[in-house]
Length: 162
Figure 1 (cartoon, rainbow, N blue to C red):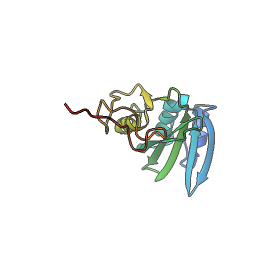
Figure 2 (cartoon, rainbow, N blue to C red):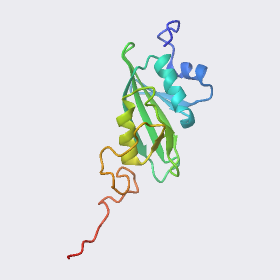
Figure 3 (cartoon, one colour):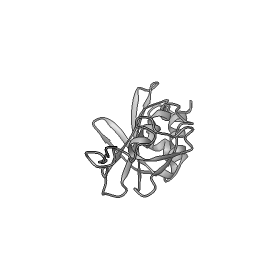
Figure 4 (cartoon, rainbow, N blue to C red):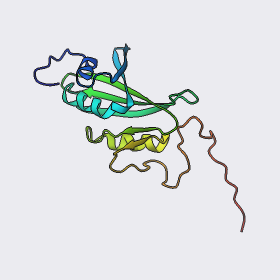
């Protein structure tokens, strides 16, 4: 948060002031605020949240697959302000066709491995990521195991005796 901004200014207000129209929804559940963001503006919003909202820590970044519903994917950022001892959940939705989103590694370095994990397990591409490659599965692995349409028992291979 900018030094002139009071600590009690809600994150939604900060985002709307800096990036008008980027907030698609906001709600509170179990004492935690969730803000849904336009996926095309995630990079700019995250920069605002770090600089103006003092959310200096990306605690986690994950995804959910809502197949067959569209938009199919939901990418979820769990942010933490160590100064204010506040947490914030930021979500954005992506269609199943070409699931791509801007990387936030330039905002939080910890996003590096989180984005690689989401890429590996869900197949969501993070544009501008410095080293987007598989992190858990072998490089030649076929598919993304946490997608709902991934075969529950994996792929079956037939082996021939030589």
